[in-house]
Amino acid sequence: MSEQTPRPLDGITVVSLEHAIAAPFCTRQLADLGARVVKIERPGSGDFARGYDQRVDGLASHFVWTNRSKESLTLDLKQDAAADILQSLLGKADVLVQNLAPGAAQRMGLGFEALHGRFPRLIVCDISGYGEGGPYEKKKAYDLLIQSEGGFLSVTGSPGEEGMAKAGCSIADIAAGMYAYTGILSALLLRDKTGVGSRIDVSMLESLVEWMGYPMYYAYNGAPPPPRAGAAHSTIYPYGPFPTQGGGTVMLGLQNEREWALFCEKVLLAPELASDPRFAANYKRSENRELLRQIIVEGFAQLTVDEVVARLEVAQIANARVNDMQGVWRHPQLHARDSWREIDSPAGKLPSLLPPGRNAAFTPRMDGVPGLGQHTTAILAELGIDTAEQARLAAAGIV
Image (cartoon, rainbow, N blue to C red; front, side, top):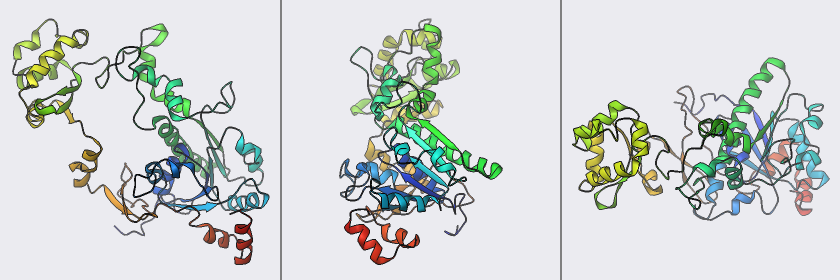
């Protein structure tokens, strides 16, 4: 397919006052669909996620993940001249995204109400920890804190008071970023109908609580919540990790009684177990999970991961290998589907995963990760600022 195939957001310009994960993850999805994303960064330091680590040939892992296909413009927004440049940019933009500290955008005159009169077609997306209004409006919010406030930690980890565990990735940021992304897409569709922009208010708390719908309803009206069950399912059994010969681990999941009977017959080679009254229904298996786990572990003790997976496949029982990160980099399915591309970065060429949800009508944008201020000169020239004025702005630390 030609690289010139039109993309859904070709011609859309997004200006983003972003840092960390939620807003950058949102705007990267927009860039994937063809939007031009101008990332505003502080001169000299930039998005603080640039300094989280140096694991990707000297670049930060979080930053590489969430910032491909963007343009970096340095502006010190505390200076009036920078604010003027930003206003000029917004005059050409379709979307403003920001996840600054609570209230910061409004103090700079960048709230929707202040901008809508000047730029009636501009869509403004505000991402924050707790959303506008309410007693938590100005409370600082980081991913782990929202995992805690949103109840995620209460149902994740191992049994016991000390067993809680955070997610190994920034799920509250990711949730908010994805709702911001879809909210912006819907606002663009709405603008096509109304001719005017709108405001989107996305909170990390509400984004994660939406994802907590199952455990919340399970604990409805004061009922006990799902117990923490480590990597196993809290209410369905057997559903989770089981050790095999040689230190391997297989993840498997049974959903119904037909699968339970097949598991007993073709995997454990113990068909009589299917009718054992201790295990004859899911709730009984869950109640007696320690005993059943011992039986399964003993059955797998003389089998390798490959042998257990082979039996599970014959029985058509859902299963997975427990991969580490190197296993994911090498995953045969990702390579068979040609899921990786090579992108540019300040550190050279890097592998980058194609966006999920492939559309056969276009190829996603897969441009490089920007260096700090890499596009400042070009963007200022585009706004009509000549070389001499650019030099003055740089000398004053404005860009």
